[in-house]
Amino acid sequence: MSHAFKGIQASGSSVYSVVAAIKSFSVLVNELMQDLKVQTRDERGVLVLDTNAWYDLELYLPVYKRIDTLLGGRGLEKVGSFVPQNAVFPPHVKDVQSALASIDIAYHMNHRKDGRDMFNPATGEMMEGIGHYTYQPVAGKNEAVMVCDNPYPCRFDMGLIKGMAQRFQPQATLTHDAHQGCRHKGAASCTYVITW
Image (cartoon, rainbow, N blue to C red; front, side):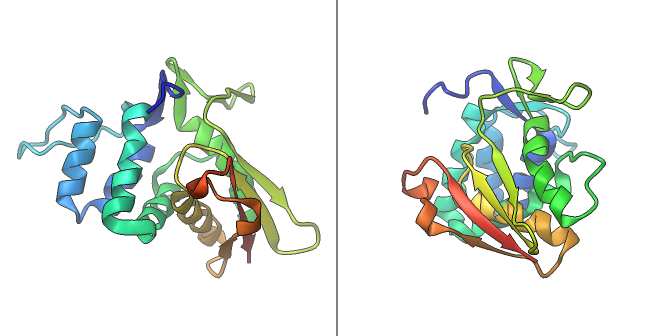
């Protein structure tokens, strides 16, 4: 992996989403813990993730490739769907529109660069370096478009965005706009259409 993400870390609470999603695959969980250089053990001697710690993104991102190899795209979607349940989100999120619009802020809140949070809620300052989840509402419709140009896998983002929308609109659906390209196939971004 390049050093593009050197100094960038993911919050333990967002990493925990991966552990929660793959917990029934103990070998995969153990590999994740070893990759992240987790040292903390519980009373039985099992490695445990510290949800208050921060984990290097360069060590964390390859885990998604392993999940894709072992569990496939549906496995990545499942992991993504766990994030809204465990990650930190701004308190103003009360409906599907504000939920989708808040993903980029929450994403930056759950990452830090060189020890500094990548989003400061007090000032509204957002640091660059990890891409974005760009929300675009569709006027007059129960529909929105999300463009993702972050380093996480396409299928993971599909699960995350759909999971977030379904917290507020259980019938929400998501489709990948393949005409706009796909990161899995080398494009710079993926575009998703969410309807509810």
